[in-house]
Amino acid sequence: MNTSHTTLRGGAAHRAPARPRRAVFSPARLGIYAFLLTAAAFFLLPLYVMLVTSVKPMSEIRLGNLLAFPAHFTLDAWSAAWQSACTGLDCNGIRVGFWNSVRIVVPSTVLSIMVGAVNGYALSFWRPRGAGLLFGVLLMGAFIPVQVMVYPLVRVLASVHLFSSLPGIVVIHTIFGMPVMTLLFRNYYASIPQELFKAARIDGGSFWRIFFQLMLPMSTPIIVVALIMQVTNIWNDFILGLVFAGTKNLPMTVQLNNIINTTTGERLYNVNMAATILTSMVPLAVYFISGRWFVRGIASGAVKG
Image (cartoon, rainbow, N blue to C red; front, top):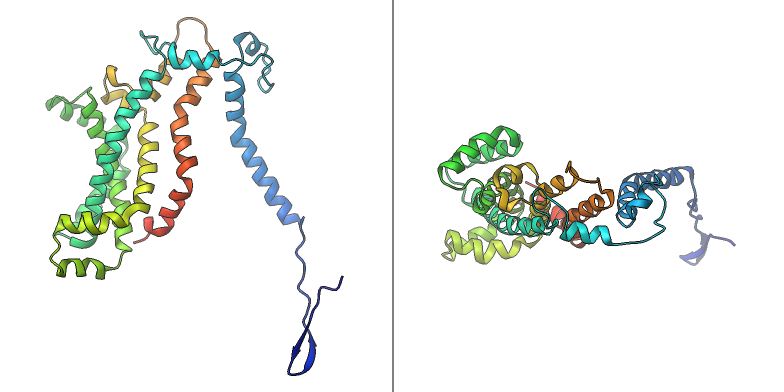
């Protein structure tokens, strides 16, 4: 088949040059596909092992066929991980840690996003005296290791009677989330035209009125980005929950560690795998549901400024 075509220009026929057809299976394309498939297999193989192990009985796991499909499919390990696995002296399953994590994540996420949004708004538009220095101090806080500040924070919370309590761990997560949230919102607001803010000021808008009626409704993309980051970071936290939450408010990650590292009784690998998957389901669901919103928020100004 002739891929060239004829065009009429000024009454004369001109034959346009044929475009070269790209090879469907060029060496470069095959190399890219091979790399992507290898990377996907590398990351999906542990998940596959966890899934198939969690639905096998222990008698089948002891045979050592790690990659084999289950011959006797069962969800008993999932039920035990959720309802009856021992997380220490209590054997109420990992569901207790799930609800503790929910009680920690919801207020911590809301407070850290609100504080970061107000800080970013103030540093972008109002620019108080010393705003640059304050922003630099906040950024320094984002790079200080958590372990350095654990003991001082323990002393401070103990002095105000918030140590080993739900309000205490919420305050801690709000403090540690504030630098990154301030950076995100400050850079996002820096991409908004200053004329909008100046027009609102001319119309007599106050600090809070401009924030709630103008800036906050325009912040949906970056709020989604901040929401994804804070939910996943706080849900996956271990050391802060272990130190500051107290025995009655231990999050799901701490109770998962207690299930897996128990030294009494038989080591139930299927229960351990089921408990691990249950613990990671919330971050996975957040990424799968809101992944495109995360990319859209980053592209709309989260890393500008």
